Length: 299
Image (cartoon, rainbow, N blue to C red):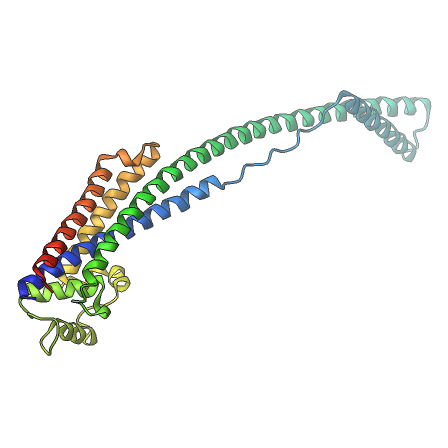
């Protein structure tokens, strides 16, 4: 291949690698959303407390019991104080009745308070559980919408991946260097004029390996994504492409979040349609380029 042909070849690979990166990130966003929605679906309902009993038969029996023990208590108290006369007995009876009535009223009041508290808690539990169930229904619907879009995304992803495999299977690039970081570096070397071939002492492979060993560049995409600004100087092309792709991912994710929250069909969203159309267009463009190369027998 000539230098210009190599640039074109690397450009096609780089564009597909970046699209695949974008789609992987978008899929990760989808999965994160589904995880959060599943937490809503699986949220447990609140248990309602048992309604407090307050039968009148129970109240009367309790009142008589309180009165009886109140009378006995006062009788014992009068006996201790040495007042067992008829007058003392009458006084203890009156006091016992008063105690009986007081305890009975206090017991009824407490029972009414318990019922009022139960009614308030019961209403809260009913309203809260109804909202939880409604949220779960909406979350299930949102999960269905997202899963439908994941299926479309996976279909497009596999389409691009197959096309990328066709490019790599031309065996122009050594298998060790068939990844986004290496390809972006090679493209930058060729486009800047640092090299005009892959092999050899001054070739792209050698420059790349030397920069990796000298830690001038970072070779692992995960490390790059962890500190993207660190490659701004020495891997500017990759930095710019990742910045652009991350903006696309964030914009598309926000669009999908808004559509899903309103229970809208994502496939009808104009921005999603535009993105999927761009993926299809890029795939068609690369396939045509491959066909031309095959026709011209360019390797």
